[in-house]
Length: 394
Length: 98
Image 1 (cartoon, chains in turn yellow, cyan):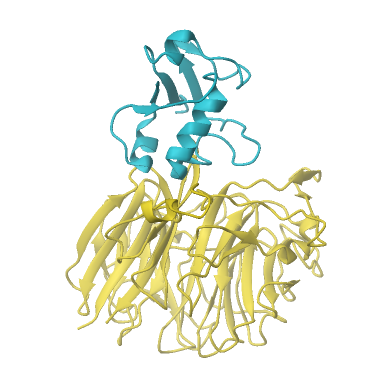
Image 2: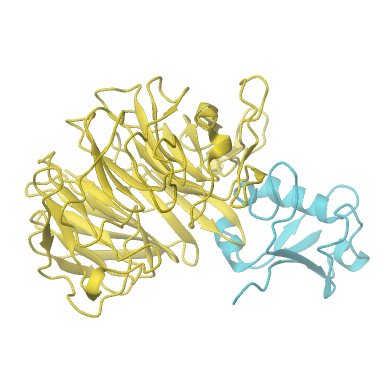
């Protein structure tokens, strides 16, 4: 029987929740890296024992951790004893070194972006928000960082190089959202290995068709009339999350600051599908593993009130690709619930029926083993959950 | 032999218990101690000072003989009692609560 392993990043450490394929009884392992913020953990699709983790702290900065044994042991890449035996005899210790490429050689010496007050500010690395391992190579992994940029490692996270072409996509006009100017979404697809999508708050979505060397904004159709009353703005949109089903790489689903949208042409244009949602503000969005037109969101009341409408925690599901949504409430608190669900904190497993999971800022992780019809808490009292990822193990 | 006391989270990261003992060639300064520390424990690179500029992270402080030496030039010789190992150099996670 399959095993399901949830990788949970929280404000005070990482946790791994494991169950068999029935997904009824769970074991809790953690905290790992207690006291640190774990923005994101994700396993390699090519080698599920390989897991990357972003560990950060206001005091001590960024650390990248890697496990090669399914989370039993962890090391910052490049600092294992065997890595210290390099040709020069010196350890590198560069797994947490994210240097923006401002070299003339790259031809893109973009060094500033727009700040809230309209002034130009230098790019300054703060943390890794999202780690996206390659679909085919366990040693290749992408990092989405704040201040917004994408980095790539091809040596298992030991060293990182910026894909600086992204910041050439009108980077001088990007500005921070309330959570910081972060690159939080990276979408890869096996069918189109050169195509990548990323999303940035508050800049928008971007697409590369040459494996990350060059990028262009893909934000036509996004409307933000209160925050950005320019219907033709190419960048400046506060995209919160994008999801894609691997069988339909040209169809994207987006949760924006306000509005839920979809694109059926690889991001060339977007149309709103908020339909009958009680609020179209929210953070995460996910697609069912076996039904490419079934989409999940968690409506949040507003951008100033980061909690569910009416104090009712409801996941909304559309089985027709948007516009027509149904509330999923069985097993979720339907009164006095004022938690938030952050953008990287919802994920689906690969089993049939599809399991779906999300974590809250109140420290609960909820799971459904039937596509969202019924929910149950897996844990109730973790630190605030920042991210949830799923590994479906044979 | 220089004695260095790390904050708890960095001891965990470096997998050390108690104080770190370092042999430092030349004068003992914050720079030379950190160079020796990062060479021995490369996972600490970037957690105390910036990789490239070597600027101290905002919430890190250095104390020697109960004195805050965080704002001294980092090539200033440390007190003789620290250089001799009689007293440790304390690397401290600064007070930053709310």
